[in-house]
Image (tube, rainbow, N blue to C red; front, side):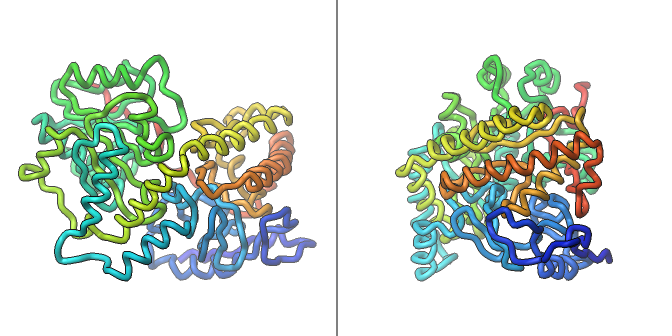
Length: 459
């Protein structure tokens, strides 16, 4: 069993203390985090239930590993250190931690019950709300995770078309049909692997090369960090219509963030099936499958998709409160406005420092900092920037996942921290010794890609 310890290198001439959101002058004390991580090692495979939250995505020995509480956009780790959070639960916290209206709805429902022997009226109420705000949501069903929803959509597409093959782009969960195209596909039969193909975003030719007469569905995240070019999404819609292929939008990230009605509303385009999770319940576990009646009605009898906890009432209460708040407070405009400030502000600082090799890209509600490999190892550059931001009280994994709780003051402080930390990165890059600046183990790569990954040639 590997034992994790906090690096001693950074302690030289510095006193370890509980860190706050400020230029602390030291890295946080994380002994309890590391103690918990050591207890997990050898007991919990990979030490985590969610890969993006795991220790491999943060500088080991420097970054906190476990959080104990959160309020708004601020979190406190198990050692008592405080941070502004730009990961926000890896997406679900669209409003913020411990958001009052959502928490009240959960508490009120908790007094009534969580799971019943018959259906909850919330199933109808929330379905009606989804039908109202999501384009083309002629039918609505609930489940618990994004992987549940995408897999249900794939099964529906196969059932409706009578075809087998699936063509995908982006990330769609852990189930066999998708993970078969990644480098973590051990345990999946070859027969399953031969049914899923991939294409590159914004590349219609790669779509045409991947589909054939037995293609049941094309599934993609409508956007990740690149904008659709030359009418890509509308061309995709036309191709699927022409060839009798079901178009599925995986709106885990775009739903209730890009627009209240997601990418379908934003781009004025209708998918045959659209699936949602993350932002719709402010942290409670739920996923939503929506789509055309003629397809979704197969769930009546022909296609089996039922779960014990699909109608779990706490998550439905949270969903109703969250979507209502997003609609009534115009949260999507807020995410866009403040997300633009931090994205543009980051790029302005990089330009002022002459750092051509770092750039924040993507839509305002969720942008990502990228690193040009010509300047150095991108993972090392990301690790160093993350390390120095942690010393300023900012929890950062490369993204700006905006929430309704990020304030103007939070953004201004973060930009001041960027200005300071990017100068450290610039110095390390100019000296060509980024590794020497790292006080712990760098972040690890994961399989996830958004294009050009394990594309199978058309037979």
